[in-house]
Image 1: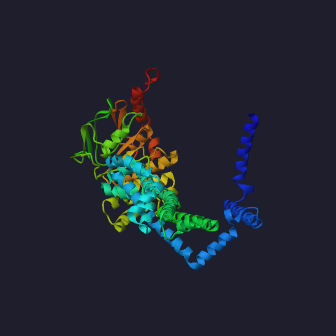
Image 2: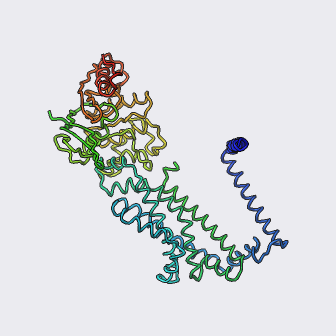
Image 3: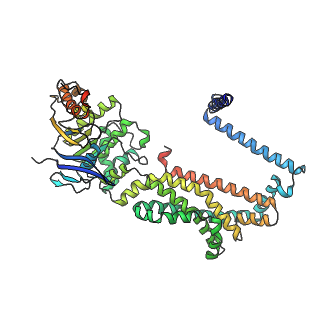
Length: 278
Length: 265
């Protein structure tokens, strides 16, 4: 008991000192962290490659970094990589705009009518509880096998999260700010546009951030079910042929895509919420 | 002469489930042109409710408020502007955009609005801060900006609720002095709601003392410190100050302290 409390005491001490490594400036500390992360990644890749070449692990089951790289160069040379990324990005971005942005607008607009918000709440929750995987085949049947159906699937995976998030934001608006607007004689539309929308923006953005992941899941799921191209299609074909290197190359591309989308939304956030970063 | 603002038999009760809570009972008061009046009372005397009723944000369950002879219709009156303890500067707008918010709402184009706001930035020492966001300003600057946002609308009546409560003492004195100078120069009517007796005495021409549960006016005191200066510290030092302070304190203490603690000479 006393030993345990001593360790936790020690942990606290350790945390306190680690937050400023030897009096290092925050910028240098960040650089150090990045450097170490790169070293860890490189070590893992090298270990993997060596293990594959020495025959410690089966390349059939686990491929190897160099094989994955080969697959990517081949796909790049044939133009398949570019085409797959283009198709998946299109599906994701369009679906994200329809579902994420559309959902946000609906969520904010529910501020106008608490009655409608209350009436629709259980239905929205019901739609939100449907797993995208369960509804995707149906959407393919309704909208066909081309890009439209994937956009619909992506939109479906985004819409409820954005709607809920922006609706919560609109509910949190300071009543005193609304009263202030009323004292200036503001109309409901003016209150909505000048106070409700901007003050909910942090919530809207956090909903959109969550949706980046959901959007890509939607696109990949749609491609798994029926597609002629796209990163998900490439992964599906790879796994059907037991081409593990192709599958892993696809996963790598998905990871890079998510990173890019996150970066874009962060830039967007700084542009929409300049006052948060002033 | 007609009062700028007149309240007749204001009563208000909140009803929740089967409980009725009486907050205000039969309030009668008025504020004349160029007059500074205060409401002072213990917590629970319904100051916030009274504020909302005067502001036109709440319709009283009884009685009426007349602003320049017109009966208030439960909508904020255009000739009335208010300032709260919370400065309510919108964090996503620059100081300039906050100050011109009301003009923007009334449809004044941006250029004209900015022209009208600019002199105020000089008067209140905020020149150069027009494009800052509120988060970059100190509490005193923010409260000044909030006052500017109200003044730029040129209201005839200023309604203020504990506007300087959250500020430290020297800043509070400075801002109160500025306020007094401004409202005298512009001949505004001010209705000030506070629980700070000192603030009420130094600023007001007339003080309404209230008691709690239900909120009622128990005394009306005309204040004449015999000091012309708008410097609040000068007014605080006036010989007559203590007299008024005692007078108000006694009426509040009589109502709100338990009997054994009453030390009223």
